[in-house]
Image 1 (spheres, one colour):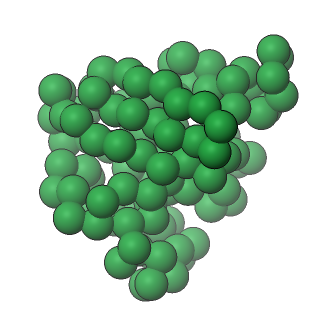
Image 2: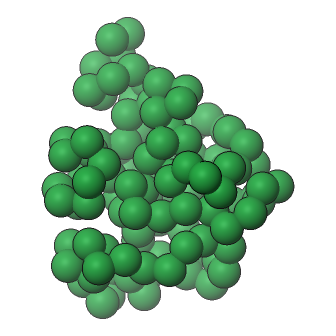
Length: 108
């Protein structure tokens, strides 16, 4: 189970290795801050995971470009560039931006 924890709300969804973390949120109509459509260009869909969580895909070139080495060491990833490695994964994701609906507008 992936737990997306925002500043005021949270949700859970089953992990699917065929979907990146951004797509998991979009399935249930949650907004994580992405402005580029999940192409790894804006860097706004940041999530923080335990840096020792070995059940996520490797850091991508887009993440190396948009996140500092310090941020990566602290567990920051881009949701659009990060995939769970297996089903049944239990992982908590800290989301600085998390709101219900498309575009981050409640009720949209």
